[in-house]
Image 1: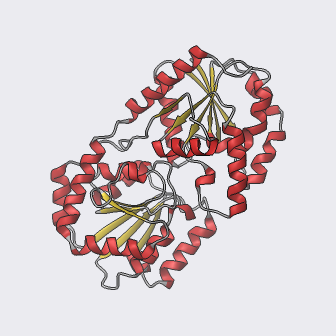
Image 2: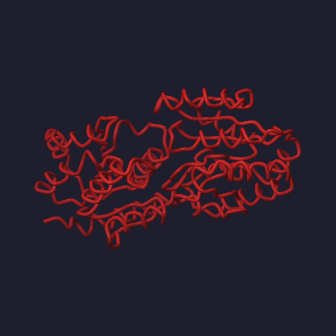
Image 3: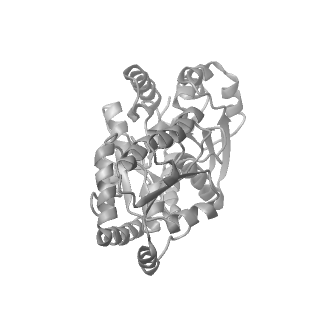
Length: 367
């Protein structure tokens, strides 16, 4: 197949969505397919991304390539809503979107969410097919469209990017040598990931018995990242919190191996690859009830699901793990078993490829 993929920036961008896209491209190329990546420049403001529809040169660039099918990362939706209409007049191949999560599902000002809902619905409605990373994401799109999103495939991300994690004996050995509860946060330092909520929760634990290591890019929202450092100092917990920045895969693997708990109380995740990665290393996960974390984490079994923004409830669950080491071990082993029940990257991406083959045989629904 000759496949196009539209993204912002580069596939090497550090995020779960870009990891998914990168794994898909790698798999397609391994199977002998040709993949052409079309990169639109990232613009920080939503209105700037909408304005990219005025650049008709983009259509000409697309038409220079003969394709069997075009994939678009849904993140690009504001920049494609009108350009897709122009493309439709000049091509016959199917256009399929990869939806990691809807922007309108994120917390934000009601006017911003309303605009995002309007634009996303207009973008999604005329497309030929949909690739979803979770059942939660599929439901959110179908609720927005008011109809089934078909044809579609749900191909979940995997958590085996860093290998197979660690074994049960290794988990038990780590548990025996622990001296405090070692929490790990992994994610870009943006407000949606909820690190400020985690810091407030930890500040409630006056007895100590914990440490936190933070892994993630600080340059996505520099102001927020700076505020996190200020917050940890103001709360009096700075000496227990270590900000590591972005790490190599090898260094991240080491952090997973040495941690006891993965704490990422995100306001919303369309899937949350980081949870599966943590579970491969036997880490119970502290996540929220919003988004798709519940597709991986059973509350009280492989971790805890807390309402978004509820730092007091989060603090209580961390205290439980500090005070009940036996439960920590039980949940660690359960997390490892849950990881093993999920497909690996090759299996998930093979699902997507089969779906794309079917789409190319059907052709475009556009006329």
